[in-house]
Image (spheres, rainbow, N blue to C red):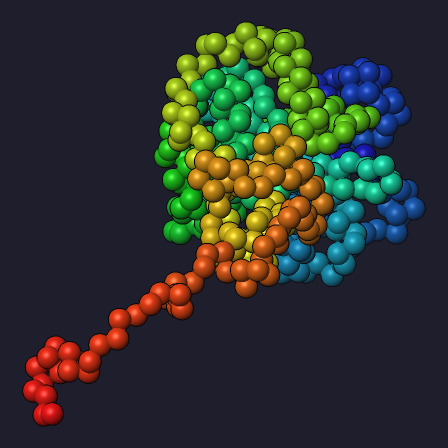
Length: 406
């Protein structure tokens, strides 16, 4: 059985006088198939002799189908009022060859003006470690709508901190900020929708304001409105990752950037132009000051009582003196760093497995001697070596104004 849409094409060409052989060549089917479906299938001679309960109702059915009614439940209900006593199966068999293909709404291709838009998304990819175990790794992707220049970065998590950090890296790679960044309704970006309006995550809204772009979300359940980045996610999964080897996340990201540059040095299949050559014409907005960008490279974490901070799913040791205090933390390449102001107080190799605890050498040194307190409590001191002048009690009476009764 072939699809109803193909049947309609066969009948349309047959109505134009084309032979079965010609129809077969045009549609990639055999001439026998074209012969079979060029006319509505008639009942067999045996069936014709036996008659059909549809006899007398075919014109009514044809009239309803002409009006666009192909729902057999509706047709059956209307035929019942006209005296039809047959069942549903025979009706479905009759209607099926005439049923058109399902309508699929078309969407226009949207081409962005220079500097107007970038699209971003996350893709969840897989890799196998040395033990043969499969792991998931999030991939952040962003693409400029006009030039098609792309950016790819792998992370440990899809949280807001990772998103903002990746977006800053992408903007710096592009050399500027697009006017609009289009995304889907991810939780790190959209808090909720109210009366059809998007209510942004307040922290992300602050980030967008500082960076100087306008966030927009695609229509709910219509990911094709950001089709450029959707295709890029599949491109990463099908073209970049298969067969690739890497030593760690930093190595994988270095390879990702090289891959982006190589791909963007070729003629793009849709635009017919070379993306990297088109980048200079994007007219992007200037990057904000480095101090503003750096603000979003850091995370602020509170040190637990046992001297750890949680960051990207792992717990890193911090000198015990900082328990209960907030410190600045970041990833710098393959190193996790914690700072008190401008002073680095801890550095660890990044741990990519969630739930791991990374101890700091000398983490609790001096804790016992100080009873677990980072600073000494205020107290008075007794000094027994100082000689004290012995005075008569009358001096106290004089100070208080009480006369001595000697």
